Image 1 (tube, rainbow, N blue to C red):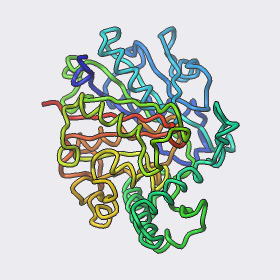
Image 2 (image 1 turned 120 degrees about the horizontal axis):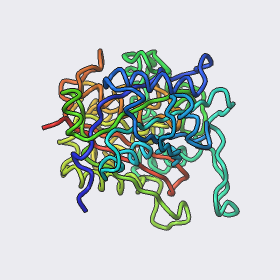
Image 3 (image 1 turned 180 degrees about the vertical axis):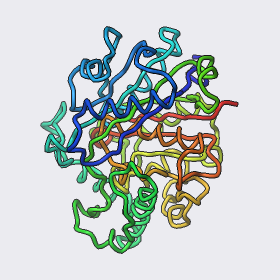
Image 4 (image 1 turned 90 degrees about the vertical axis):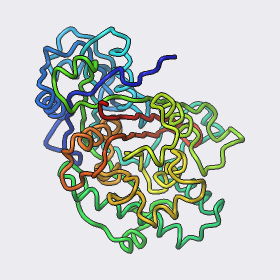
Length: 390
């Protein structure tokens, strides 16, 4: 298997401001993201040979993307894969270019949730729901938090302090990002004392519901070199889907095996053997603060049970040795489900170009994105690795 490494390049990206976008329709958001990507790349709609649209609930087909962007008669495929939707749309677009089928393609992620009344507190029942009743996401991840604290003998006060440090970090990063949904500092004490949503997760432990869109233009490295010097390369892509949910007997709520498997696949393609030492930045799926904590261990950044110590040491802050969620993460940038994965790629792209403003990292040569969605023990996880041209 030859893999995707260095076979495709990102030459243009766009991202809307995330938030309560009552002023814009889903079509408006797609236009906003796409035209930023066009301007960024120097390309236009006539150059796009095929497109992939990631959305969970906004559209049933790819036709609205064709209508919004006037992409007449080109192939457009709608992709939906839980919270990994946008990255999976991006993944499919990358494979089409790598296969030599197309030269220049578009991956778009969009979601318009505020107008729908979606609160983030409901989840549809899946197969086997007679033995696995639907559980709201805060409750799902609250179970992970309580089990993680018990498994590693972390008392409530210490655990809440760790989660508050994660939320406060991401709120700080959000203040440096004009496109983030939430842009204000929140202290650890405010986070600890906030109203409880699903014990032990409080209000500030949960990401918000947002509207937004993000777009990426993908091509070959050979074409990319004719367009710009600061394109980025895809180094590795991993996708893993769990099959058995809480029915499996080898899952203990203290790790996400899909993250482990997807990251291992992406690391192998990218040639990464020591992720903590080699990776410069990570945009991860912090739908809840406990999720980010566990992901640090699943991605190989911290030993099992030791992520709390790394959080306390500031290892994942902007000044740390491995900054995480530099743009505010889902917690503060927001989470329009079908757009979040490409939004993460947008941040890696800007960091590698040195265009991240007040949150710019000194070293930004290798970065990853990570998405996780589904039901406990039966998630869909996507991991993507990006690097600068050699």
